[in-house]
Image (cartoon, rainbow, N blue to C red):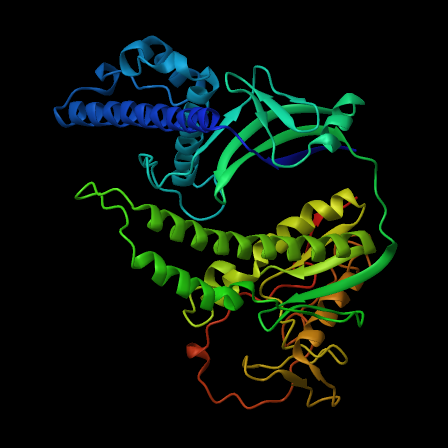
Length: 461
């Protein structure tokens, strides 16, 4: 199986090499801002000419927004715009122009309605202080030198903080090829990430026929449908908040930088700020490690994994729960399950966000009209079932797989789904007898999905 995989390593550059890395990242920003200024000036000129009544065929020619068009124009004027350009690799300027072309393309497709997701705004100029520092190399000398060094264009041989022998052996055997390398300032140090095209042997989960429903939450990180012990939420950020507050107070007492007066930070401020940053980086590392362990264990064990399509963007609007929801990492869990199930020969199924997994009885399929978050035990008035609401939701997610035939859709008499009828209580079963005192006009709900629409296959091997 041919896959694209990334290998990231921390770097230990010398002071001269660190300055060169920062210069390359600055070159990316300069090229991006130059191209954006050219595009905005061209658009403003054409708009002004239209206001004067000039026909469209006589307007100033439109500037090409493609990476190749921008790069051709950059090569014509780079001696005037950036006389120092030869000190950095040409890939740095190409990286900035490629990012600008991608941003402009996303904005155009978003306006035309051909791009999924939220609306994308017009690109903004990159800040020297707040912008993320990174540069991508696609051509030139990109290789590994032994087990502790990497070689990059113009930058040369740089020592790594951790061994790279695993990737070096993979490249030596001919089973992989480096497509690009990205250097990024992240978590207080420089990292290099190699994008590698490699052959990965087809995997097979330990229980290929097993189906598991995974219900994600805040109080408990993951609850499973097969009786597997739930995983408690480690709450890394909440645990470190007391220490972070103390470190932040220490930083505020020192003489920090001031852009208005051009005051440089004191050495003690730099030391206190570095200590605070290390505490924040540790929280991110612990969260990332826990999520990797969870997703790897699930992907290597079960052939089919069912999760919910959570509206995380809407959930974090609740100011009382926003920090706890962000600390869990729902989106990262789903992202990792997507590719890890493919690598291990399984499949990931995503239930619709409108599927009432928590309100449905996993025994008789009765659906409650309301189930507040404060009620942690699900009690069915129809069959008398009583269990934890998260475990009940996980069982309902696993039961959705029974309505599909080899992942092709809802199981019906004619095999095409034409004879399916939605029950009176909506998808998921019948509704229990509860009083409906609120007027129907005041109840706002999303569209109730059919069983076939409640489940979507992301990856199938």
